[in-house]
Image 1: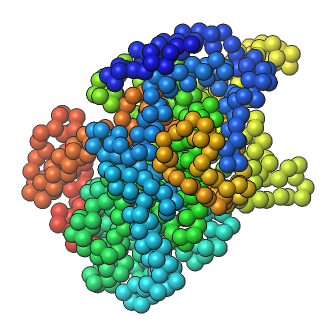
Image 2: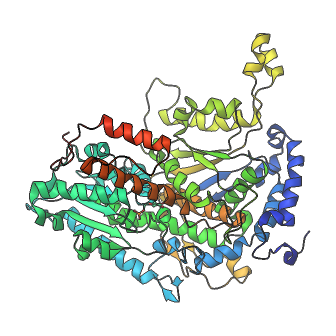
Length: 609
Ligand SMILES: O=P(O)(O)OC[C@H]1O[C@H](O)[C@H](O)[C@@H](O)[C@@H]1O
């Protein structure tokens, strides 16, 4: 056993230069000697690789790992100072060093009496001030106390935003749309999301809506994102051309950290809902970014349950020992798959249509966070970070890309199933209920991947010789299974308290979220979301990168603005295309020539759908 001190890295040391990393590298050889078929025969191993949290069952026995692997991964976490980094995050330290910001999305869902400091100031009261404002505003809109310019109640909402100001709220909305209580709360109301700057997305989103009864929520952390701002100006035009410019005050509100720009845009600051630079866009679903549109659609009490679920995971992440810490275990296993077994992708496969927007959301959370090429200190990395995340609801995926997963490349899969369907269907003459049919696939696929099918088995089945190799499945393909109790509000039957046994035993520093007492009814899909947020952070902590900046999105934006200028100059003044390479110049010129019939100075044109 290595001594703790020797495991600790100097801050500039890369994790790949530490002993635990080297040990794991060497350990790959041991793992390569075993097949998941054999690992799965070891019941006590499998038992130790299952755990339950808030009614959620996690089974990682189909990872290509032994208990020895796990121990080595815990040593790696120690070498990477993961615990210290988690504490620094919860303590509001500026761990997003390239933007000089703290990372405190956990404060967004902390109970009212919690104390979470950023720069020595407790941020929780501010968080609740905004939440109270949202509760009040959404209740007024929903009750019809707040009316539009022509005196009609606002029953429809279009939320304009992109990236983190879109994907998380869309995920939650999609999961709630078929939930019994949420359906009742949303009756007669619509929530739509306008993200793409493509005018087709505008057309789709305003189809069937009446400006008189529509509220537009502009959601942008920076309030400078080109796509969002053009969409906001377009819907401002849609409202004012129908109802007059003074209607904007009644029909448009905003969510942003940049309240000055909100006001400049023409939105009444009283109708602006703030959040803070310590909330990363992709981690902002629990801020006004998600809470406002979702409260307008479902009412604040539903959204409050949502916040409590995420808070329960935060508490678990902060206080559970690593061996029983779901986000930590998942994060370490992902590092194992990416950095040691060399699997560069991960499939996220919910066996639930209500979770259909989970993979797109996690795609941003994970790929924007961990797709980095240098360490947090700016040192180029000799190893890859992040993984290629993709996914679809499971059974749809089975009929699409699973072929590659079964017989082509190895892609670790996250299978996510639900015990009780939101919308049960039974047909009296069928063998099983519709949900059981769905779940049969959820249970079967992981074993198909792990065990495969051997040529011997095929021969026994009298498969024609020339087809044996085609029908062989190598197996040994890792996955993990997460079984959620329900997608409806679920009672976990216990009060969560922050003074957990482990914290007391290990004499942990004062908890970031003290005296957490939660009525234990949550939406398990929210726990899932928070688990993945923290899992991604754990991966980044181990890889030694900054998971909270996103410089990689800037270059494309600035080149697009150069093109924008060119398109303007060419259309308005007939200027030729200059300053681009041959390929881009040819493409832009072709585009301009082929669309020369577009009027160069049109009067305002809105979609006619
Ligand atoms: O919320 P906004 O400031 O409009 O930003 C929207 C999105 O813009 C960029 O693309 C960032 O990479 C994302 O992280 C962010 O979520």
